[in-house]
Image (cartoon, rainbow, N blue to C red; front, side, top):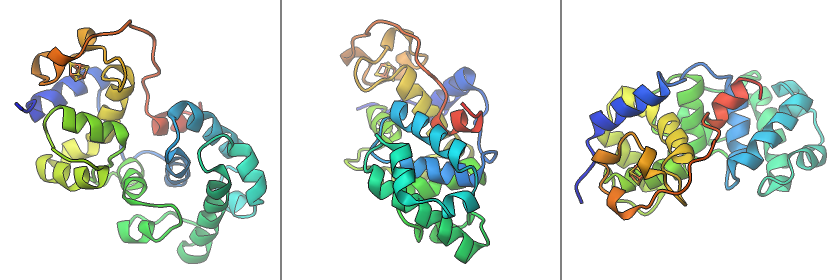
Length: 228
Ligand code: SF4
């Protein structure tokens, strides 16, 4: 399969979405919201994260929370009971081991409950501006669709993209492909007729556009940062 040209795709996505919002988010909110998002759709994660941060807005408040109250608040996110426990444990670990701060080192992040490579890299990209590849379902799917990688699992996509992309592209790839995957290159019904990279896309001939609708375009993390 012909690969879509990486630099041209990023240029087109930058035209559409502007500079990526990296290195500017609150580390604690990025960390907790990304834990909540695990195996949960954005339209469930967003309101749950809003409810959680309204009730427990900082590390100390969440550390003192009753996990059952947190679970009740975040339901119906997937695994809400376990995630309720997990985020309270995360807050306590941050206080006990990191003076209440989110660490900026990948290894330290990976030692926290429910924090895997995607969550760690999201924190490093969005909160600390480190050029890590944060691979969620959209990034994995679209990177394969564009022929940039040939992988079955997101765990394999991460190093493959890391080898392919330069630092600026690594910083932008999560935000751009998440937004693009939600708005245009949707898993069901991609809007190829409205796609800014249709001419470069190896899959475009196989896709039929479906009706155009208003779709929320910001990333989860950007939305949380905006307080909405
Ligand atoms: S042309 Fe269609 S399949 Fe290709 S990237 Fe655009 S929306 Fe996705």
